[in-house]
Image (cartoon, rainbow, N blue to C red; front, top):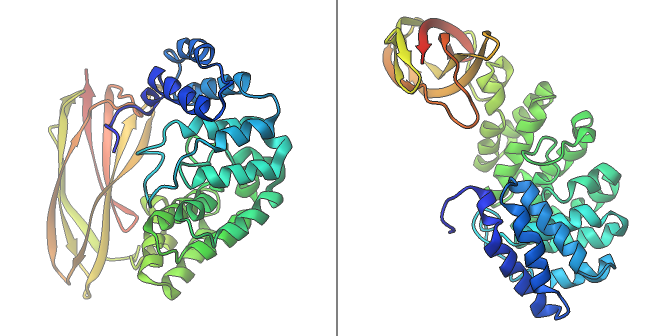
Length: 372
């Protein structure tokens, strides 16, 4: 596996040189020096997607102007098909600009480009590349994807789900599937029993996307799958409902066997110390009691209500634990929460709050002061 580093760093001078050499090996007329001299200086200030696009644009300028001829050249350097769960986050980094090439320049050669994406997918990914094609003619793409749900390659089967996710991170949003989720649910019905966890993970993520716009639909689908499915399908259900569970959705919790009306009680909830600086941590502690006369399965989360730039607070849900409590049984829980800035969340000084959710119900809250 490649050494961990920011993804954008893979798209630097070394990759440009390597890609140029690969192209020249099958297309001797390729101007290696001109391509590398033109593309390499562009990359340093750019982020990931812009770097990939710059490399792809360079290929367009230095390959034959005829798109089918250019794609035929690029398909010759794809390399062998890869094993399960290898690919875009392990090997084959040079293939993403090729997928970008097809994404950006191939719409006028629709079927040829879909065939190219099919081959790329068996070696890397075309989950981003297929999205403009879905936006241009969804039914034409879906007709091919309905065939590929049965493909021998798990990468292709995963692509059927991942490429049609309505809210794929880094990918173009597919509003047509946000409005009409039934179009992709039909594909997921085929894939839910896939033998590869790699594929089932994508199915779960796809359902989680749909749940953001159609929560009841996903509850209905997952309830049916959970009742009728295998252990693998039930795994999908648990992960597909994760956002709804974090949001305390009673129907989603019920699918997983958690009752939102349980007689649970939180006592002695503390957030200590009462005042910390950015970069320090608070310690959460509580005792949870089952006041009922039967055992209950519990999912316990906590929400940190972060102060935002405008001074208002916004909650972020974090997983804590799951447990089963017998009648009159109690459990003591602790958790350390670090208030350290991360790339996805800037911290602001002020009065923060933490509350505790048990089976979606908020049972306790406390506050602490965050300062510089």
